[in-house]
Amino acid sequence: MRALKWLLFVVVILGVLFVVGDRAAVSYAESMAADKIRSSQGLEKSPEVSIKGFPFLTQVAGRSLTEVDADLGGMSASADGRTLRVEKLSAQFHDVALGSDYTSVQSAASATGNARISYADLTKAAGGDVKIAYAGEKNGRSQVKISPNVPILNSLEVTGSITVSGNTVRLRADEIPAMCRALPACQSTVRSQTDHVWKLDQLPGNLKLDKVVTRPDGISLTASGHDVKLPG
Image (spheres, rainbow, N blue to C red):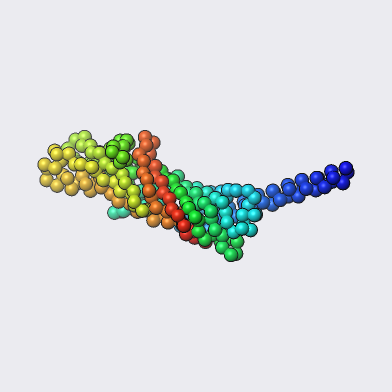
């Protein structure tokens, strides 16, 4: 009986040591991954990386990680000298393949991403004292309310649509009011303030934008990809 108790004690101790070693290894791997993502994506600071699944060491031995999540903070996209700030960018990579050295990553079978743009940042990116606010959805299109700055017209307001494709975010006025179309150069002035295209060249793993939804507190973007190539 005493021998059995000692055996159980040894098993428990070894189990604890394995768990401690496993958690230490995953913490080290998360730190290395964060540094590699920061350098490859040109980020100002290292992102928060979380490697899911237990045990970690057996995943490494099989050279395949179940899931790796990364909180990348924010990023920016420029167009015509105006910068669009994207905040709260995160990505989730599934079935991540490790290289033969067990320290580098090669690809992920699939990945998803999420990001948010505030109306304040969208307004700033539009420039020219333009104001942009929430306007819900119509016919499946995410819409915003745009107030251009046209001195000869007071309180001009148009409805605009936001669409995404690949790495591109587009903002465009759905229709210019008749009173503006009747005035010389008014329509082109309004279009210059309401119609914009921004390319998000820093999407992790070359994810592609596939959906945009306008919400009262901001614009939500989702992205996805399959057989995603990963840096480092």
